[in-house]
Image (cartoon, rainbow over all chains, first blue to last red):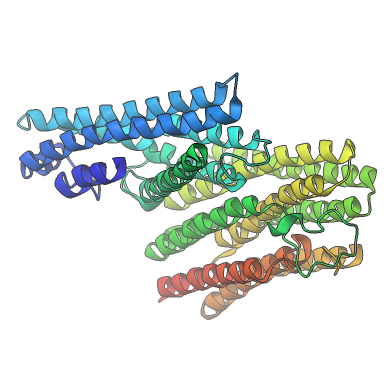
Length: 214
Length: 199
Length: 93
């Protein structure tokens, strides 16, 4: 649900995909917002609303991890904190973009700065998501029961995903090319992997919940 | 799961095929291979856009560093393969020693990289000097993360081989680690010609 | 069926791999006439692909792995090699 609502709000309505180039000048950025003002505002509100689902999703993963860990649920708590941190980053990014769209007739330098801030918060935040991944992987590896809550490949999958969030840290160094915030290696691949990760975790968590109720 | 069929039996076993390592590790290996391939393709594409810049920058790299590192990683893979062979013959001490040698090759790789990076940085060449060097640092850096991770795995395997114990779960775990290390090797085998040799 | 390769095979394969590395270094480092550059690069990439297949089959023990995995890895190798070489030749053109 998070994915659907966020995609609709952020991609379809606000048209934030593909991202505006980090190489644009303040005036061009202001034009980007001014030309589509109403839709951008609406899209950002929707994007924020979608985060409600993200939090429920994170909590349901944690509750499954807690079943593995039992009495000392360090990893499930860590996953929870990571999820909350990730959610905060997306939320703040939406609010900052919202601030840009609130007064699009600001001096262009200010618009540029706020737009940068929003994009940098959104694209270079990788630590909280990485925390989630490692906590999930570690918890699954520690599951020694005969019928594990998550299959072990999910743990390996959760080691693979954070390795590919690393290039997102390169965004600060580049304004053009494959490592900029609209580049294939620093933006598109991590974004795609993030979505694949969400789908996999959703399916596997649902399966675990079904086994639990049975 | 096919992996626990006869995995612990020595040399001869009746099964028709045998998956090295647990099936889960292959999710990680195949996933990494695919993503690195995307990186390679992107590099080749951007290279085609500004050929002169790339060939000119490539001249400042030392092929010998790259080749030396290739040989180091291939040799570490050799030691890991021999260690797996030793483990199946229940020669645990030999296996431990071979794995330690593989670890040393990994350490040698990092040492060479240390000097190579150091030389480049002293010459004022950084991540943002130009597009070629961006790729150079990112590809080798991302690969280096894998090397460091893999060396941790090798240490873990060393401990496993040393502490003895028999049975399928152990050998499957060791095979998983070995497969991961071989993947690290495979990735470098492609990175080397792309960055250092492609004309 | 024997799992993995014998020691003899493992060492032999390693020797071939090191020789192939030297060969690709020689091809890559030599002063090549401009008309042959594309060919030299293709040889170097092809050598890398062969090396990878050797590592996978004889060191990584893929040779005796289930058919599915062998097929998938061969498909990856063909795809990676094909993509790199075709993008390379497009760039040269």
